[in-house]
Amino acid sequence: MARRRFIVEADGGSRGNPGPAGYGAVVLDAVTGEPLAEVAEYIGTATNNVAEYKGLIAGLRAAHALDPEADVQVRMDSKLVIEQMSGRWKIKHPDMRPLATEAKGLLPPGQVTYGWIPREQNSHADRLANEAMDAGKRGERWQPKVPPGGTLATAAPEAPADDALAEPATTPAAPPVGWGSADLGAPTTFVLLRHGETPLTPEKRFSGSGGSDPGLSDIGHRQAELVAASLAARGTIQAVVTSPLKRCRETAHAVAARLGLDVRVDEGLRETDFGAWEGLTFAEVRDRYPDDLDTWLGSSKAAPTGGGESFATVARRVALSRDKLIARYAGRTVLLVSHVTPIKTLTRLALGAPPESLFRMELSAASLSAVAYYGDGNASVRLLNDTSHLR
Image 1: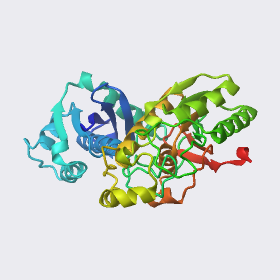
Image 2: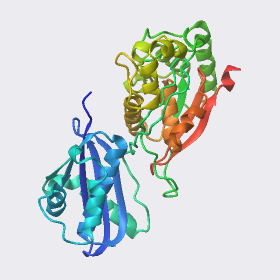
Image 3: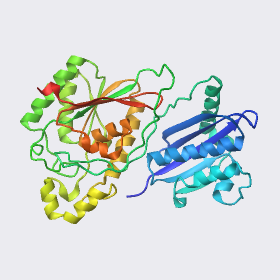
């Protein structure tokens, strides 16, 4: 699979040189040009060059957070930074050397290229830098408009159950901790619903994106009706988005019909493709593919036998869907109907918890969880594995 490609545009400025300074950077999808993350910060008194280097570092960190294996093209209007980072100019100033060293250490040299662009083509990053300086002048913290993407962190799976143990092994990084402005506006809230039971659920078989795509069992349909009634009584859901797999679509349509809403399908919410392991129990996989299973359990980049997806791959697409949905439904409450892997991934990223926390979460069929995302990039887990509506 080809590596993702990002463009990092970065800038920094100083009002006085040295004087009040700030930086800004944006990470763009190299194919679509879509902004994936914005970062900016007021850094106090500094020179233009220091601010520019700090903008570069912040942009590379944001790109690494989105995908540590992506190819990155850096574009800046600072001839000094571009030529020094490209190795064509020597770094003589003592203030620049540690910054350049830090920037070079963020990604392997072969993944990053540098190119100069005119100032008028660097307007996005320039705007962010000035916004940060303006916020610093007011004694405030700059607030991002594009949700941060985060990085992927390693995890191994738990014993499978229907959607199986899919836990990302490289996971989008946790947002900044703390509080920003007192008025951040209404958060974007994802109510996370795992689909109802399928015939494979009680048998604890691997059931991902590459198998038979089972629908709901009779019990699963009943669970979907119960959760629909519960959500209708609460009256807070404003939109419904679902994985494309049948068990999720059936669950989502049962809820949407009760709420009078349409259903939107998002490919990023689908479960892991478990390759040749689809439909098997954990014991059967252990018996048939012992070496492959051990490798898979030990590395987030290892895929199941027969061309399945690694946890790292799954986590990247889940994080990308998260950011797109936050932007689309800003300030609204949205029901996401999905699977074990995506829901646990979203929860773990919101908590900023260590990878092993994934194996200490229970996620039952037709359970509800919830995460709120705020305008300053922080997230808050509000609910996990609620099944009270099923009793």
